[in-house]
Length: 623
Image (tube, rainbow, N blue to C red):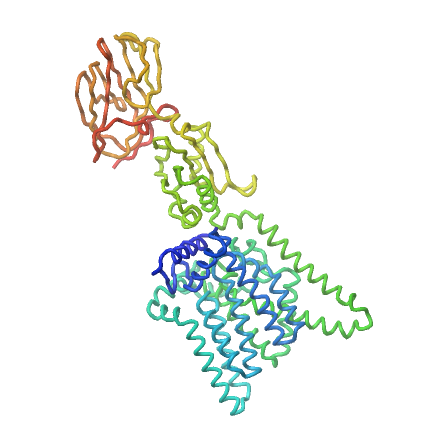
């Protein structure tokens, strides 16, 4: 689930849960309130998952197919409409963006629908079609920014038309009413976003400014950067396509071989017959639509999302040769039975369908760059967190911190901690709940260290193929795994000679004498292990025992003697070697060692601050 999808989903959930939250525009991911509203409806009525949101894009993608048919039929008849719609339906460029919950695929849908109503309005002269065209254009303006390039193409075409075509006075008067109706409809549909843009221009134009080649580029020479970007975008159809795994199989040409040939042939046919208005319009839309990518960041070129406004033009030009072949073939092959005449068309259709389906659903689906481009580490982390449930302690690499994908997929994860590097392990909880560690590959050393500390835990390496790099490492720890290294080693020896072999050995959960000691005084108790200091500062240690006791931290004496005594000692954050020796000479043995951390109160040193091997005293953070 890509970052932008998750962020949109979080805002859509907020739309549903907060009555007063109804933004006209959400600038962090450059989407309008209209799209958020659609996502909110999808989450509420379809599925509160990314699949519910993606169905919105599927709807726009599917809606573009009948819109293409309607426009094609209006321009050149039903046969052309079917060809036009089929090519758009099987085009991988269109399919790809129909399956991501982000704005973009709405642009071709609104373009085709607007052109359909505009064509009808010009042919039939009805106000109704002008109003529908205006509403479609207005709604299109509230979605992806590439639609504005379509409006620019329509505007240039209209200006050229005024100079080229002669319009009678009565028709000109009625056309004025149509333009007025269209303008009012555009204003009604686009008004919320237009008002937002007028009141908050910095927010509305933020994404455009930050992705403009005028403001950001690798090449300091603007002219050279523009030339290189133009060249890359012209080549993306046949030579080298978008490198972004979310947009394309990286580097794969945007058009399949057959569609690429048809596209060039169709351009030639359109240039040969400029008297047809539709040829002229799509010849304008193609270069103007490409400006969305050419004028954006040069290091991202070619960009198939920002140039998505050219999709109707690409499908139109690719359909022209097929219509020409159909007409020529009908005359040339008239004596041949119809079923044999249709065979070449059927084979071409099967090739287009099969090639694009195989590229998208097989090659692209199994490509690591594509798989890993959709916030994959965060997606796996979020799904696993949701599976494990709220009663698990989660520990995440800093790379995974505060990511909307995790927040969307696992909204109920109250016990989540971000690793403090390099002081990541051991896990310092009271071991009352299981824990799960989600480790980014760049922090792989944490995973290897966890395998050393918790050999009985469950470890997983997530990737789409064993030969590919890992996306995320996962370690699942039970409470027993966590507590296995907690506490401190305690040995008991008769008398005061600590060189003798111990009579009893324990792993104690605190610096006290456990129940079950069978050794009578005199005996010597030695606690030895690792003490974790949670912060830098001065700690107060309070001892209460009748035994002669020596407390050493990192080899430095802190307390020495019997009875009630205390001392202060400065510790850096991290692990310290701790050794306590207490010699009990007689009477009822008792022992208590407490501490008072900086800013805290006097308390027993609990087990999440005490560790046994393989945890060792290394790695300190000063201040």
